[in-house]
Amino acid sequence: MWSNHIKYHGSMRTHQLVLQWIESQLLGGHLALGGRLPAERTLAEQLGVSRTSVREAIRILEAMGVVRAGVGSGPDAGTVVIADPTTALGSALRLHVATSHLPVADIVQTRVLLESWAVARANPGSPALAEAAALLDEMEKSTETDQFLALDVRFHLALAEAAGNAVVSAMMGSLREAIQGYVGRLTANLPDWDATAARLRDEHRSILAAINENDGAAAAKLVADHIQGYYEEAGLGSGH
Amino acid sequence: MWSNHIKYHGSMRTHQLVLQWIESQLLGGHLALGGRLPAERTLAEQLGVSRTSVREAIRILEAMGVVRAGVGSGPDAGTVVIADPTTALGSALRLHVATSHLPVADIVQTRVLLESWAVARANPGSPALAEAAALLDEMEKSTETDQFLALDVRFHLALAEAAGNAVVSAMMGSLREAIQGYVGRLTANLPDWDATAARLRDEHRSILAAINENDGAAAAKLVADHIQGYYEEAGLGSGH
DNA sequence: TAGGGCATGTGGTCCAACCACATCAAGTAC
DNA sequence: GTACTTGATGTGGTTGGACCACATGCCCTA
Image (cartoon, rainbow over all chains, first blue to last red):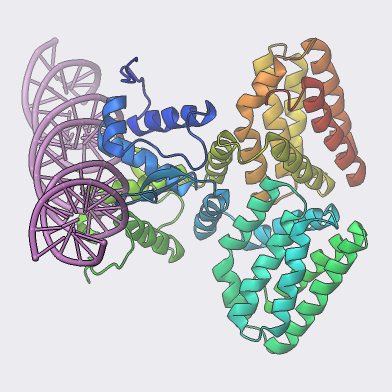
């Protein structure tokens, strides 16, 4: 067995070196989804770096949604590989919205673009659409605003997943997450929530019906109007 | 002046608390693009946490493209707020490609989707298009593969920026970055690089011409064929 | 056999020190 | 006066060691 000690790393910072090592393990298949990283102390000794540097690397991977750190002992402890690109993209987008570098309007526009595409090419037989239909039934009985919005998020996410593109699904989820707080504040502006909810339910059914009739173009148009209509009604842009 | 010391943070980990504080400063406008964070030691004392925790938070922000840490003294030193969503999204996507959770084919498909949309709604008078044209002239004289590809990246990025949507631009750049290494390996598969380069140059000119003639639909079709054609010629999917 | 309690191993946090680097100011030689 | 050297200062980068909280599982005891 050869030593993993690494010396002479040029201008690269130590935690980046650890990051690189872990990424190579992922690429090489030595570390797969569900797998556990060596303990921080062990990894530090193996790579010849301090535990601090290892921890900084793990923090980044955690923020990227690649690993999950768990204390204690047993199967749920340690640092394990997960796959959650949505939170990573969502956090990044949210932070850049906070710096006013990414306008909310651009995020909404991108969401319209992605979701229109997704419903246009959704397969009517997709299990994700069955889930979407089930969510619609739940929303029918839902009166609480918060509950309705939570179901709404899941419904739109199901639509995005029906297209079968993991990248589009992840981006859709992250866009929604990034402006989640914004949407909540916007909803408070609505004059008559019950009327709005009723309209949203109808539009949801129309979208799903268009998809099931294989009319992708119509579904795309409906979903675009659906999203843009909501933001316009609630007054997008008035918060800037 | 009131103390910023924070006690009683429930189940939240210390670095997340620092993260939250910094995000609140960004949202409140007390910290803007180009501004400098307090020194790590200072911030640690102000928030009543260790420097380690502050550093972990800063690492995450750095990975998210929100800040840039610089050693030494002077205007370029310290931790300053930047706005680089592209590297954040790119790193996240690249890592999840490494875990085999995001198929390269989905990334290419998403790129086609976004870039088609961008050229379809690009404004012919946009300065980004002028830059794109200038890049085409450079590519005309470019014979080295690496140089050509570097210019190609900038050309497509300029096209994306012509649509005027910062989120789409950032996502486009991140998609390209995430599969940058993949593209390089693919290019080595090409039987006749010079012939391919000549074809790419022609297609680039056609795309730009369509945009300038206000024919967005044609431009979208051309750019979709352009991208998909390249990956198919180089053998997308053969590397898995 | 059932229960309590300790041994073990994990991440979470903190501290104190040192290094490398970049700037700027004071002092010095010319 | 000017140009150069040199040290003081302040920044992030890195390290080692210590301790804590937590969760498991074994071992010993009643």
